[in-house]
Image (cartoon, rainbow, N blue to C red; front, side, top):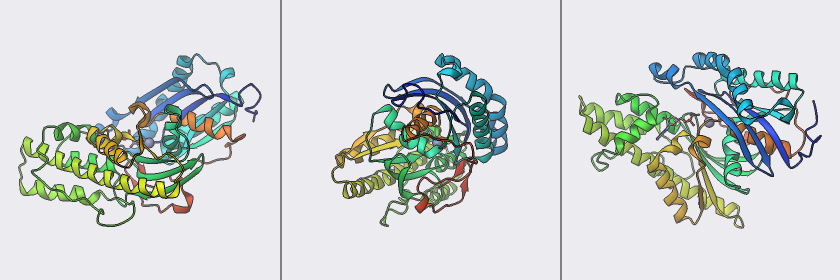
Length: 368
Ligand code: KG4
Ligand code: ZN
């Protein structure tokens, strides 16, 4: 392994990142931390391959990553205008996620690192999401992270690189998964989130009242499976449902989710202030569900009420991408040399090992 400190790069590194843990094949070249720049970020979504199955099919995902990853990496290097000499290290997602895809990306990264004689950083995908706001918004530690995607729904206290505490999580479906299942139930296409949001915009939010699961209990855990069941029960009563009813149900569903997230965000910020009275309170939202405008508005209102900063990285960096993996690699390398050649890809990898509480694997990965 070569040392990353051979150039004037203790303060600036150029890292190739690779991400393949779900249904996006992505590569990026990022420079930092002194002069933060995303030199390239290429993402190829597999939505078309999975649409007809109404969700991500792990085997299809792994094969699609194999077919295209070489070209995606070459494209990211070309767009960045980099040769291998310009690259200080290779960072790749080593988990958690759909294991076939993780193996494809991480083994490719190992091969590149070995051939180009560069250090390899095995990045926790969730750490990639957690640290993105430090790339985009220069956010200082500590801060709160709300991760809301198809595979994850959790509040994390981010104290430093590698120093996380999971404060709360879904006890059943991830939020994106609940949006996708709700869409499927109502005959809307996959992925469901954007379609539910579009229909909700035309709906009457007062017509149906769906539950706010777990809000009667303390703590920061969440539950979304019951919400979807309640919606199904309402829809069944009115079968066959007309378009307006679908819109009204979507509006009620989206409002319930927003209310739950806003209430839990307020509690999470109160806990944050308790733990870190001297820090400026801040909450970062990441994951595909962060695209939802009503959810964003609710989170912003909750943060405002608590006097906290609300940070939502641009959507392309909120959803799965490789720039966040390269950046997490840079953050890790700042702490000292890294050699992850012996690391194995893993389907589950909680950021907070002391509080793992694995709940089983969702369609889009481990819901840790
Ligand atoms: O982070 P992401 O792109 O992929 C992973 O799950 O890792 O998140 C995808 C999820 C899907 O479940 C999708 O339905 C949801 O994010 N989503 C949305 C919206 N856009 C995407 N959910 C609600 N409203 C949206 N506008
Ligand atoms: Zn993700």
